[in-house]
Length: 611
Image (cartoon, rainbow, N blue to C red; front, side, top):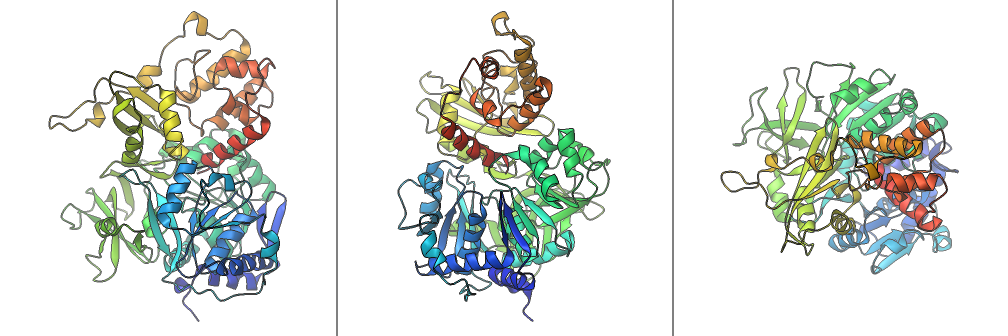
């Protein structure tokens, strides 16, 4: 029998489809697909792709809405032998074009709603909707996948310190080994998994591919935003869910949503540091198991796991745990020697999950992927994360060796944002930091020095970045400084940068900025609490004050409770001031854009929220 750790993803899926062909594999909105039907549909598209040149190691961009067709497309690319390059429709067109160009993807799979995101069609664009009849004419019978375990499965782009994202090349055997390692963690009995993560985030492979090779029913969360997650848990009897701490924190803030999480058998949390305060909220409410997970994309999704047993702990942080099966870790000092137990060191990860490297970046690959210094064979990935080995054998995350941070679970190279800011004609110098002025609430703050005394407006800087970078990379705060603080040796002193809250905090608003009605008072209070401010004036722009898309559903729930009425999520995205939102709710101010455009904007923002 073939070692499943050396299998390809299509082989693993085909095995499951044969075991339970009539079981429900995928549910999305009102659509459901059985395993046999999902297998046949992906076989047809795979043949269609092969006729258009897709084969072993062919890069194929996938730019589709979160529908059943998305999962069909991912499986089809893999069955055709290619490697999928995930493209999120919520990303700016410039970002999407950059990834398409860098990856050399000659084939892009899109649908009617997402084709507009491509500026200039690549050599071969497959429009799934328009070509549906031709695709359906292909045979749905099994086909031979030309890819082997050592071939690419996907290439995911992460933030790059030089201002350009980099592609991480992940092979089938990396993924298959990870799947094997997750089996004992999650268990052998298939359940119902609510998949909420964008395909541009590698942990989606656990939700969409591990599940479908293990017999789960996958509920594909659409573009509605996070506010529907608790209802979906209840409606579909969800047993398994994976969240970033940012999203878990938002859900846990609402008692009814927290009660929905209590129904889960397994709750997996990872992507950024897990605050102990969040654990204190979740552990008493969730009857099932909770795991804190850690792992870079370069070692194929998760590498360590820690099961959280208690609601309270004397530790100041939640450990990231021990290595998964097929993985080993080293904590090394600056001379690449083992650091003594309890002492900080850089984390190196080895084992079957270590990926091929970075696409067309041999110098960077050589810098980050090194020969295993202790095993005598294989390679290790140099994470840049500082950890220490605890007495009980678990690892504790302490920080970074560079300027890389995690925001909403995504890896962000601050240098990429700084490089984009310095393209603004009024910016001479820029520095970006991740601040946590309130515990558990990490946000990006940008500091700029103006060129020729022309101080740029925050709205102008935000618009520039929004046209080039994903939403999670746009800072919440912008501050103009006469000069950046320096250390004694002339480097930027990031610790001396002022808190952006200092420029927005005030104990009371001017008389003409104070709420005039009960509705205005409740709106101002809800936003002030979310932003951590003493007060919010009538005409203050919430997003200029530091609001993020992740806050909006939280404020929506609070306002619906205090005002005793339904408030569409889109209203909070369209009306950015107390006076504007209150006027709209009173019927005095109409929506500024057509409903179709509003829904498209909301859908895009909703996808960004669920990272």
